[in-house]
Length: 416
Image: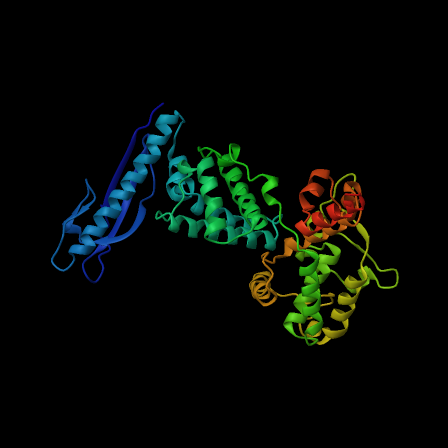
């Protein structure tokens, strides 16, 4: 295979600027085929420019600019040579179109962060299958990756650096420096994995870190609130003035603990989905809405609600009508930004002296654990939550120490 490539810089002397400078371009010729001049977005004096080396000779008062231009042009030449070298080493054929595509997307093909930025912009415009909520989640993940790269002192994450060790270090950063719980970290890894798969499909050559590293489902186990913690939340709720933020937030928290609702479901439940006489709710969980041949409507749940859950739903409908009318909402619960609610829950931790960090998925784990403690078996939990795998049910049930003590205490009927 021929890899005949020529790179030359030239300066446009026909379009001099007021200060006597002119724009610098790069000419590329691959196997005899020449490209249009590529603008370098740099200017310099024509009589002080070396076309062969791309060096800008210094001029009094412009020494720093000359130095920076020379370095930048050296980087551009190195970038072009690097692309040719990659093709030569991998014995792949190259032509002008392939070269220009790699040159224009050089950083996206070498840095995970730049690749994610490029792909997210493309998906935002062209991919109608991805939801705004998913893009928002991916953008949050991108922010964490950028913060992690700065923490590492590099500002970028090269594809060549990806391996299981990298995935483990990223997970440690999310846990220790960002304070993210297991479930949020799991979502971050899941989002990164989406773009790594997209990069591999686009013939990027690197090691997939998730081939040898797995953020195992066992790690997504979350603790559960004790009965005493739940009672503290209930007492605090009853002390709040109707229509206040704390009152509306606690209505959602208590409903999640009592009914096992995700935050995505709480923000979608409408009054007509609840029968307040029979105390039942019929709805399709947002994350289980995908239609299959067995379930053409997705997962449809028809669950009995506890008295406490019915109370907070009725309270929310009665007390928050003015707020919902202002928001033009027909939902049961008042919807706020999830990040804002999470910050407020940290304040709630301090206020009620609850040691377990409060977050939305914790309440779902708590519901599953307390349902199991009250006699529901694995199959029954699967029906209640709409799970298709019994292993998920086992992950969600996390008995507290007081639950274990209570059951062991029941054995005291035996004579000593």
